[in-house]
Image 1: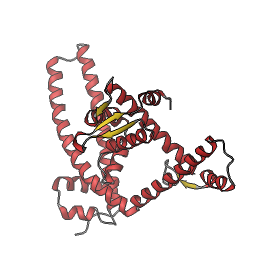
Image 2: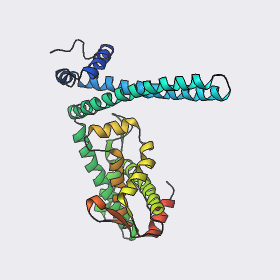
Image 3: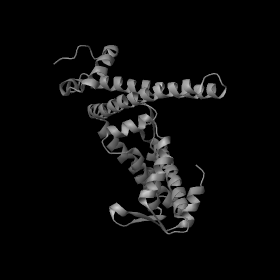
Image 4: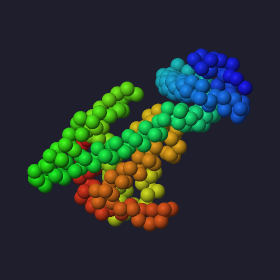
Length: 287
């Protein structure tokens, strides 16, 4: 079958996708995910999610106004409760529709990533950052020992400032490898500080904490800091939860510094405190 609109007619696509979300016809979604239409479908679904977010904020403002009017005696309790019940029904319907949109967008976004080669790009960028971090670590080690750098050392370190790599502020942005490594390190340090503070709080005087308890607190701390775009982009990679991935990386930071160590079976894993003073210093460090 052919879709009844062109790949540049987003207005028509919005109406069509809206109906397709309710019909769930596999053949229709195969066409929507085809190479000619998948990027448009991605735009349309993201637009729907944006409108849902705006509508949610608008409804919250209306609820706040209604509570204020109730407190001021401008409306009766009966009117307020009736409006609240109607709002509850609308919220349920919106939540159901949003779940449909997010489910389809996750699948469509993964197709877009493959079409654009985003997965390959991300893997290459991870390698570039790892190499840059290794060069930076080597430089710090040589200078920290007070040794005289060789010409080979200086040539290697120069790569940090002279190598031009894609930036993170847009599709066409560029930056130095050194700046990219600094940004990556700062983000890891920030997550490490957060995790160190959580471990200290949960552990108290104990020498270890359960990973399950840690994960619950971590989610409450970190999830609100993630944007819908970040979560959607990570979900499109098919690698699970971004919150859990951030925890995995933060644990790696603390382990590499010798502050903690994992122990126990996978289902009953614990995090052992190896250097409490180091955790305190990290948690108290300023960005």
